[in-house]
Amino acid sequence: MTESLIRSDDHRLEPSGSRTLPTAPPPGGSPIPALASARRELRQQLRAERRALSPHQQTQAAQGLARVLRGFFRFRKACTVAAYWPADGEIDPWPALQVHPRPRLLLPCLTHPAREGRLLFLPFEPGQPLVPNRFGIPEPRTRGAKPRPLWAVDLVLVPLVGFDRAGGRLGMGGGFYDRTFSAGARRRPYLLGVAHHFQEQDWLPVADWDVPLDAVATDRNLIGVRTGMAR
Image 1 (cartoon, rainbow, N blue to C red):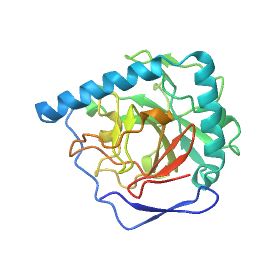
Image 2 (tube, rainbow, N blue to C red):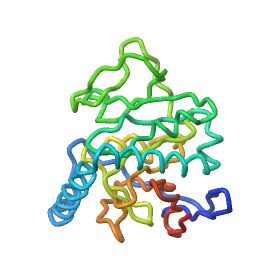
Image 3 (cartoon, rainbow, N blue to C red):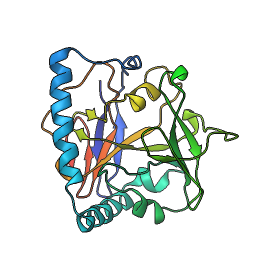
Image 4 (spheres, rainbow, N blue to C red):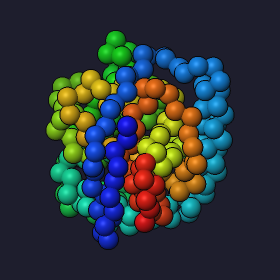
């Protein structure tokens, strides 16, 4: 069950209640055919919409996201923040991170398939050389790097393709975030989805193993999941 969240005037979203996390999907796992088909069609539609944004629209969206995140107490107070490198029209989180009060930044890295497709989170400094992973997305070099354990990460900015107000998240289909933050994690960070506002859906077809989000920040507002409260 997704947490209930309470809003105050400074985007304060406090958790209450408890959460039961799903089982992680197996690598390459997929829902039943009808559900998989619905997710695939919606994913294609939303990816096309965000790729169609002009550079100016993307810049405006990133600036809007920065304004929203600056007003969110969990973002302001987080000492260790895992971000992501935007690709495929994803909203850019870096303008917000540039004004964050000096967080320790991490970037996700894909693990070897033998490790069941989970993510590692490695330290990142602006200007640090990155290498493309197998999807062409830049990430830190893993050789000699020491991953940060999940219990030591305060907040994760989670990219997504679609979301709803019950905490549902539609990703790119690889299942990396779901496997990483499944019930096997000793302590799960606060998962803050980030997206363009038009990626919100009234309802998402989700699988049993989908890990729910704690909240979602868009270029327009901050949404407390399940209660659907927005500002």
